[in-house]
Length: 116
Image (cartoon, rainbow, N blue to C red; front, side, top):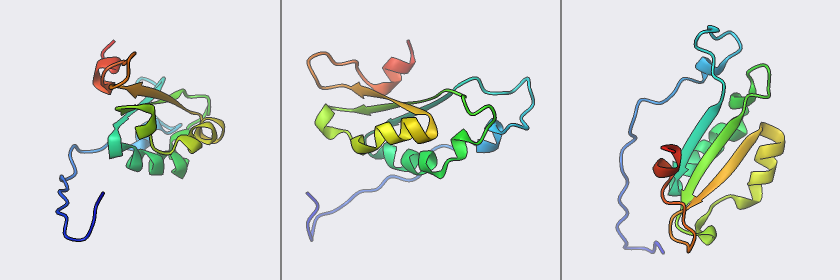
């Protein structure tokens, strides 16, 4: 736990991001997306939560564009926002795939699952 006097290390933002305009209905038909794949591990779920709940991913027509979030944690108990997964599916069309790395039937890390 973080308590007064503890040191907290924070890493800088990495990467250049992804323009959601590339998913718009006005996108060039040759560049249109067929599926949106999101990947997060640990606290990386926080910015994706904001992105999902903004509704921007589902603005593209038709709204049936598959959106899959691969979310990695060590165990089921480490997963954040589990009470929101059903809502994300129903309201935003986001299907959360849990990727657990430290359980008896571990799938490995998110990058391993995505490489299949």
